[in-house]
Length: 146
Image (cartoon, rainbow, N blue to C red; front, top):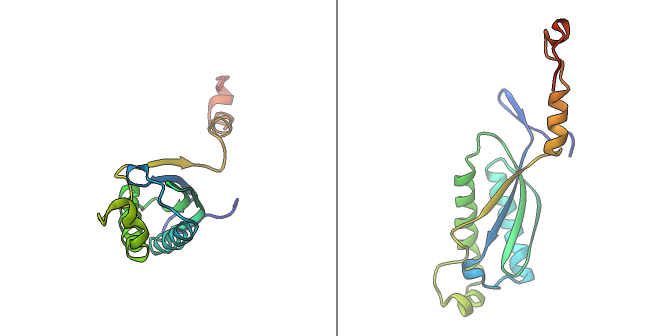
């Protein structure tokens, strides 16, 4: 993924985020078929927003998404869209299965989520690279860099 950059307008970026969504009340409602369907739904929704699903998997009560996005994207709005659309589609397609747990309430996801930015290199590697830059004027004046 070294050259897997987004280019849009006057910017080039490589921003990735790790998102974790949990089911309402952490109920263990996901089956293999639901996880497969969520993969398709999230991939489609991210493509509509000019994002890319890099990796996806889940367990009975939560899912993990690793996706690439452009700086124009408002992550909170994107996550709200991912949760609301996926919830609606899964409840329509797997309503009978979910009704056993949620008693026909229109819920799937917990209201909270976890998101973390991810990079191609570690923070320490990036800091070392930045610290090693040749600041103009520092060498001539004998200034010691970090």
